[in-house]
Length: 387
Image: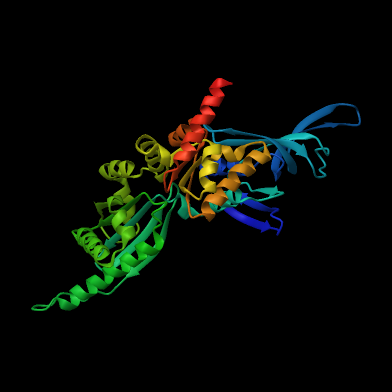
């Protein structure tokens, strides 16, 4: 998604203009546009004209409309988004208050104006427009003295860092200068990884090189991480996959990703953080039920005690047509973040999101047990069954 324009006022109102560039962007737009928002975009309108003789003719014209959104329909198979509402601005083809349906199209800009932009909507825009948020694969292609640190999305490869270090050649009887240069090169690559690879998003790091450069580099990197207590690298060691490349230049990445054996490894390692969080919740629910709760009332009660370590919530709850319901969940997310908790927003299109949806769509893993909350839950259940 490309951000063309953004303006927010102090009272929280404002508008953004976006250009969807790939099918996934339609999903972001579906989550962004809500009832009572104002949507402005070009659209096709069938216009009937009558001549002086009384004969009529019908033809299609492209015009720009601004509608007040009443209904949003998303076709997941075709990645098509249809938005219906009443026209609220003067137009030569469409009367004020007349209904019209706008089909959002790829590479055609649209503007969304909201009376209030909450943190979820703003975060959705940032996520859709930041390619690093989609890049769940990072790649380092390297050879002695040259390395490229890249982020790979579904549609592009972004070079985040290019490293070029002169390494002295080996000389008879003395290799010390060569070894020092090599270690300096490795250290620079490690710093680039720490700076540019966001392990909250990236699920796999591909390290490719000719010969044994990749093996020596990874061995050195994890030895240094252990010495310097760089927990980020040590905790994500399992995400690194080694492969052969013909050179340390970006074009070598294409041959690496085309290797079927590497493609299989990547599919295995690209397990999302959301799936792991849901597994952790189910395990906690089984082993320590006083530290795992689902349902708004119980989760809200745990939040009041600042007990939530991880909040799990589906994006479906933020698409509620009732403003009060949406606001309720937005407030919960903001509060958990303020209390230092981690928030995982699940896509209802994914299997993990569907599973969470079956558990009311909201769940939490707690920092400490709350048996009182567990008793309240049992009391609520018994009173429901009595009723």
